[in-house]
Length: 594
Image (cartoon, rainbow, N blue to C red):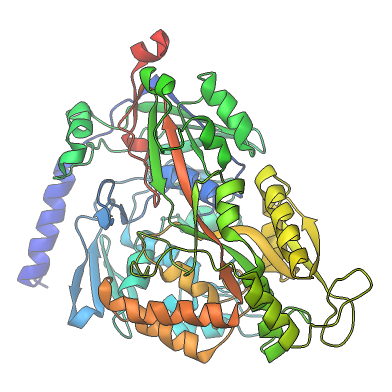
């Protein structure tokens, strides 16, 4: 049967694109990019929660889109997609065409045959986000958004049932080998945009690994996993099947020099990426100062050793050619309260008052200044600057108000004290607030400040320290009273942060286990609006509700401080994505030294 003219034109365009798909060139194995950061959870893109894991995954796997390298605020940029989505039917139909000629790296699951990336791979990978049996327990918002997804997810939640990956979902289909179509129950721009950067995995590999691909990283990205020694190092090699790409472009004059320096280069140039898994930032700094790392990022006061009080790179480092990349972080740090805890949880007046008192008692301005060396700003709303949903008219100031804290405690039943001056609970029992946190220097400095602030209003405190991965597990399982040491963000879309208090989210997302219909309505209003100023009204309401009930209290937005050696080229760090494929190394400059 003849194809309609429009479909025929699309297929001809894809065929022409395939002809121009440049074959992979050999990256230089002598160009080794040396990085350092904390250990990772694993290589499964749909089951990881930390930035370190995502940074490695984004070098191995690919989404239809990535976030634009230069644009601020950023926007979707085609990666394995031919172009931006075709949005029709009032925003409820999104059609995306996948570039042909892109292949996964080899794996025994492919039985020795080349395995081309197809639209079905994105259907499968998005379905993994929906699967309630995986780590996040499903994704309620995208489940409600995609036509037909709810019935499939509900069937998977039945006793003894599993998610049926073969069950068609009306709103999530591959129209042909290279065409993906999403049909929505209602317009939902931020949720769909967020899921269009989903990294594609191959179903055959997942099934061959019996669902556990934490160490079986088979993607179509510019690099492939060669080695991962837990708490030691990760080594990535160039993917020999990866296509040749060019350095991104921009019309902004501020990027002109960087773009000129990379013009004409066939990328990726870097042949090997070596990642030293170093949890503490001070050892990371020493490795950078000894020229053993090419690029590092600091979020703690360690960065003040390289930066003057006026925010400029120290003169001696600038003379050596070291570059400073201050990055406004897209994360907000929070104190989480377990709403199911009998002491701090619940929605009674006294429990709300206790949480709000603790919120007012914590001096986040001092936290930003002393613990983070001034490389953070106090937060008084959920969304950080530069992310959709942030209210730029709200002054950036600390919520700290110990007088308000004392008044709330006295008024709502916490006025009685023991022989040591510590407050008793409303029922007359001893009151101790135990915080789950991490055993690193910054968190211990935070503990010291927290203890001082809480004791100032008569609250006894205790601390339970776990390494980050164990702390995450405990948080997701609800095994905590108060939690600090986790932040949330990493996307230019504020939806992810707001979703942390959405009543339908599973505990892996809604760590506070908060549920309030008014909040859920505001979030749904936010999601039905195109990304932009119209979203501010429901965004303000969600922040107001969060501060009124205090299940999750914003503390600071930390600044990421990136530093690169003079021989690292093409580097323009982003708060949203990791772009090692665009980097290059000047080997002659590296051999020469600063």
